[in-house]
Length: 66
Image (cartoon, rainbow, N blue to C red; front, side, top):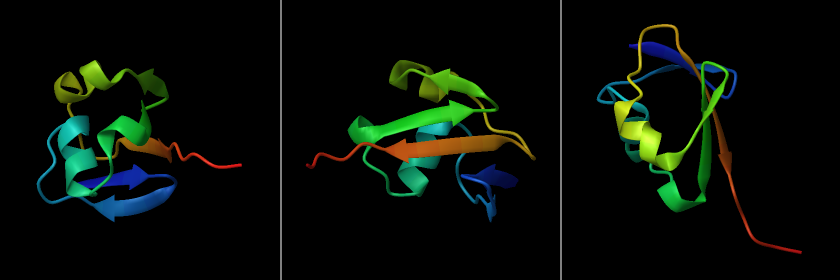
């Protein structure tokens, strides 16, 4: 399935929902914020948020620093 992640078209092979996408991309769930089709999601919403062809996902990693 083809979706857009952070403005870049990507082919996703396994992910059927947002939680699986985070896993497929190897991102740390506790340090990642997700917006799916313009809607910011809480982490507990990720498993229920199904992905479909043409969806748009924005991912932001939280990092500590000064």
